[in-house]
Length: 126
Image (cartoon, rainbow, N blue to C red):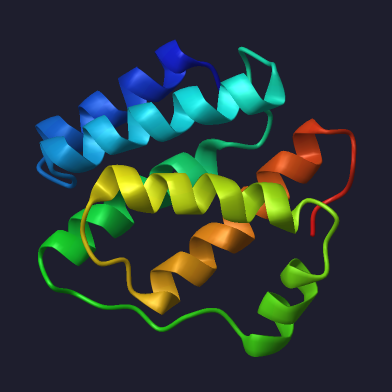
């Protein structure tokens, strides 16, 4: 997925009122930060993360919740070599969002980011 692919995907979601404009903007910013960290213009296996992210932010803005990932799965992610980098990206995203990010959504984002970073750094999914 490159920035153009992301913009097309987000524009469709925005036009169909699936996501809000603020979620769109924060997602673009998060993608730009990730491509900078990965030093790539095209991120492999990023579609799930960058579809989940704007829909999650829109859910949060609407006050809707979601159950978090399985604790065993989260523990495995926390032990992954790219977890610190994933956490850094999610923390930066949280600052950009400037709203509360529920633990369940935070944990899902950690999972998605860890997997995407691993796939693009030459590793395997976490």
